[in-house]
Length: 332
Image (cartoon, rainbow, N blue to C red; front, side, top):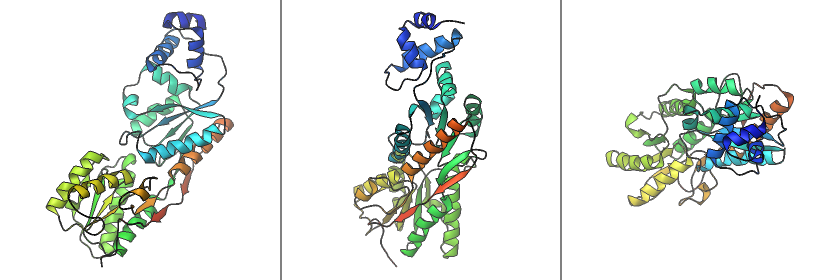
């Protein structure tokens, strides 16, 4: 078996650099290219690092349908980081689907050497592969059988917002968000939402109009364009339900460009209550999801699994809350 000195020489780096990278030292800064080269060299030379990690090292796999700058996912990450910081743990790796689909030897090695993973969303076929690399996994805002899932009551959360829409007297209700016709587990929320939408309309004798449903695939620019199309085809629309607060922000901006006032001309509701929502103009009516709390609890459960060398299989649901603000009003 090769020595650390041989790995350093082959990778053209110092012994210290090899040690820091292979131990996932959180304070050590190296380029991704250097990390990949060291990890690949160590693998090719069959070098086994025997040093001790100073902390537990956690990895996060984030949804590709959102950018890392999305406040909702930042809040989840913030919750994870907050708990890890006070429990001798560190988020040493954040990866996206595109990186998983183009798996490099270095990334594969990094994933296998993590103490555990927190995942927000992942395709089933990719999950099967990931579990061959790491068994300690906790899901956040996603429900996968056989694993620990930290989330909220999706049905109840969506029902809260639909009940509010109906109580305001809105009847011409549009929705802009993610795909609503996919059977993939990652689209459960959207499928559930459409089911509740149809049932709510039926219970209130309001006809369902598929032309008022738009799939922007969670893209704010596409969402803004769809608002313009929606209102040109259906100017009678009374309220738009945005699949997330970030999309609601794009909708409010587009309404201003169209010289429409919210809520006087049209109402807007969101979903997840990011920290900026109360400062939107107008302040956004939405449902508060416990994003930071979910992140903290996911980290707590994962660290418990790691330390006890066990796998927890349970679903933990945290409370949600309707936040009625200025973007809706009673019209009937």
